Image 1: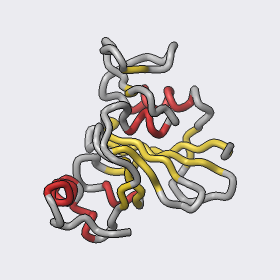
Image 2 (image 1 turned 90 degrees about the vertical axis):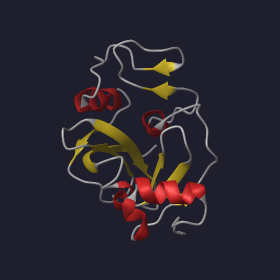
Image 3 (image 1 turned 120 degrees about the vertical axis):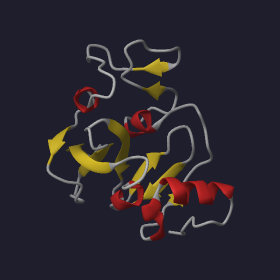
Image 4 (image 1 turned 180 degrees about the vertical axis):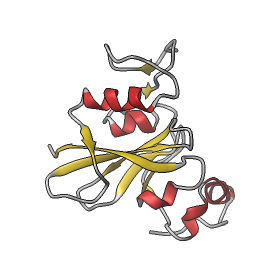
Amino acid sequence: MASFKYKDAENYRLSRDFPALDKYPLTRTSEATRDYNCFAYVAGDTKRQWACLPILPRGVYWPPGIERKENDVWSVIFAYKTLGYDLCDDGKLEANVEKIAIYVDAEDRPLHAAIQRENGEWQSKLGRDIDVSHSLESLEGGLYGKAKYFMSRSRK
């Protein structure tokens, strides 16, 4: 993976927003798009954004029957349960198991989600920006807090 340290304006912004990139670099895997966000990306939905807002704006989705409590990590966990994920202990790679990580801030508010690929790398969407391949640590300590909750399901 190539580090994004100060090569251009985007790299400067990423290094500022995610200070761990100096030690744990990431790789861009797509161009920026506003079509979806990290929570949708982890769910495999690249057509709309997912958000547990009290009122859903046009183009924003939340699974039916799942309570929408803004800034509530349990709303996010229950949403991913509708896709067959269950809470697990950690993000360690396991054969035939697909894992997701939910990043939270100090108040346990969900800020980001990432999905683990078969090779053990994590992938995610940086808000309405680019998709990236990274380690869990790459995005910690900056805008996204810490990867604290992990969920898993059998790999399809």
